[in-house]
Image (cartoon, rainbow, N blue to C red):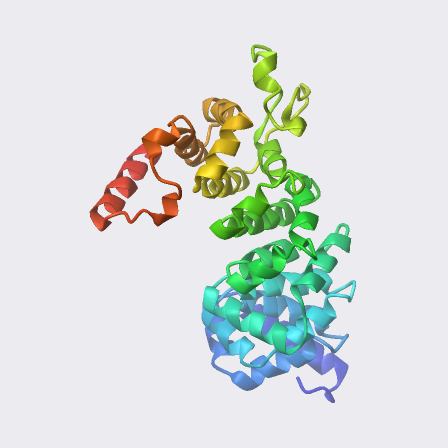
Length: 335
């Protein structure tokens, strides 16, 4: 496995290692051998075996403990640099996505990026120019957006990285990329202090989040109701399809729910007749979790602000016993 070994010997050894990574026992064995992990990282830059090495790394990085061991070898600069390789780029993106699934590992990856001067802007650039490849940069960016500093970079008003990502809510080339970007948007909606900017007409976030949830405009909707909707949601054609992926629809609704936390957000939703789109989705969607997510927003919007009587829902402290009661009610609904 050493760089100076004969090519045929390295290839045979690498195939054996790749086979081992196909089982939990094999991953555990390799994880306990730091020198072997280090060799695998180095072989990513060795063309005769780099593809098999990258496939082995994909398998190894699915295990959080093994990922922690891999990250101790500071592989992130190598992974990002190798993304430009047309044969390895997709695999590198998959490894980065796997490595950042756990929050602790995600933080380690981000710190290595900072040390290597790899910016969030450069990852967004790669994602936006990758065409039909590097789809797993979407989940990678989503995982990183669990980190508050990453969300701050994404929502920097000067760079407008967030705005560049919004069209991907309608990207049909890959459900992986589309889902990753929708998760980024949902995570950014957690930042209540940014809601005013997120709901600014110039950004047009609301349309980008609602459009995947909307089907053809029903004929029985009155014109005055339709014309209150955001412009992009008005009079949709018969061929307009609702987002097909259950998880993506649910994440969009979770993000919209976050935007309802403040009075300004709720009043904007009512003025734009968001209820209309959600009601139609709730009536027609076959997925119980999606219907529940839509219902949670509808329950907020049909109340008056006098009934709600609080500006920010997130400032309400819910007793633990009520948490348990709500979770039990949701579980009953879903069953």
